[in-house]
Image (cartoon, rainbow over all chains, first blue to last red; front, top):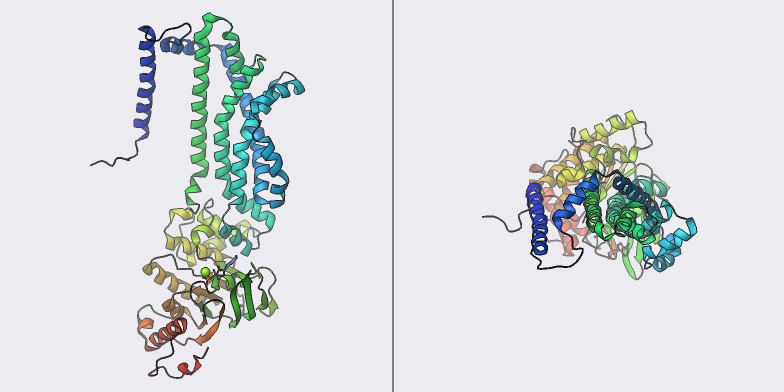
Length: 263
Length: 270
Ligand SMILES: Nc1ncnc2c1ncn2[C@@H]1O[C@H](COP(=O)(O)OP(=O)(O)O)[C@@H](O)[C@H]1O
Ligand SMILES: [Mg+2]
């Protein structure tokens, strides 16, 4: 007899995922072709896939993909550095927490996208204001994860180091930081997906022509190009899947030991 | 082991610890003689862990003083190594066994450090396991790693807080014997806290029995059972049986039985 909750093998999961995706595409294709749903500019899956295939061989498009990736990485990097350092210090040192908790509470609810135009005005048309917008959205999960992780480091681990004459700075570097790293990385992982969405959104919003968003914006000015718009959007989605897969792999490789943490 | 360290002596005088309105330790004065095994036994909540934290310099007593080799303790004494009850929280899961054991030796030259780590692992019977992560090991093996880490510091006083409370009975017996072997070969002072009466009698040269909180010393009992001790023969010795009954009565506050209790009965006045 099989257990209901028996975990599926990776292969099975991939096969099932592909079947599901193809199934949805097929249903959509049939619905549109039989005119059950109709209207101008509906995405015919087969056309989108064909267009997507062309896009992946299109250097102009690929240049924009790499532009978006660089913009996203810069933003994520800035967010990681700021989030880990500020969040880590807020978690480890009560004084720092008291100093920064009010500014953090005030800034957090601001939608990152809203500061994009502002940054563009201040910094001019370039990648930097867009990366900063990405950073503004990505910083929060990283900061809060870093803060809670540093705050909840096991006191027994800290005491152990104290009995070994490790200095307060040493305890920070050799106990609190390593014990918190997996949770900080979880924050970065969450932010990576958010960041990609924000990167493309801010490109669409600012319309400075760069990135996948800029490409989509340009293509959408002509109604005949709608399949290109859909295809570029789909590529962005695939990029997101790829990114979160890579981060999951890195997580397993670097922080496999976290199952050894108590609780 | 190549060590000419002199074992340390520990003297507690009038230790009291108050947490807010909760008086955990009332008044404890006792001596942990150099080169011997002293066991503190007391009911749960008697302040045993609190007392060890004070001895380790992690916490200050509300009043009273601890002297380590004649010098009053102010911070963690040099030459003291501590083994915590909860090995899974005390070992660092991001480090392999070798790095865990070498953790306190960071100031030491790399080659010497490795040889001291290997020597300590050898002493606890874990040679060849240095590349494992602690969480890949059984509870008993993890506690051996924790003991090896303490030994790698070449301590003059080894302090252990209920070290075997979370391992099974068979492993516990093995680890008790391991501790006695190490103590005999390295000639260090050992201070063990336990709530297990059999364990206290089996390990000890001296037992310090604590009352329940606010705790005081009920009695200090010398144990003259022959060494090396043996899980079977020592535990069937009439003296062992008499001592464990005696400790149990002290902990339960039951007066000594009128027959066969001998001279010790007179001491139970506290
Ligand atoms: N950090 C602390 N703050 C407040 N009370 C504490 C603290 N540590 C221990 N206590 C109290 O002191 C008493 C003794 O605790 P403990 O030393 O852990 O006992 P034992 O180890 O003998 O079981 C308990 O009542 C406990 O609640
Ligand atoms: Mg305790």
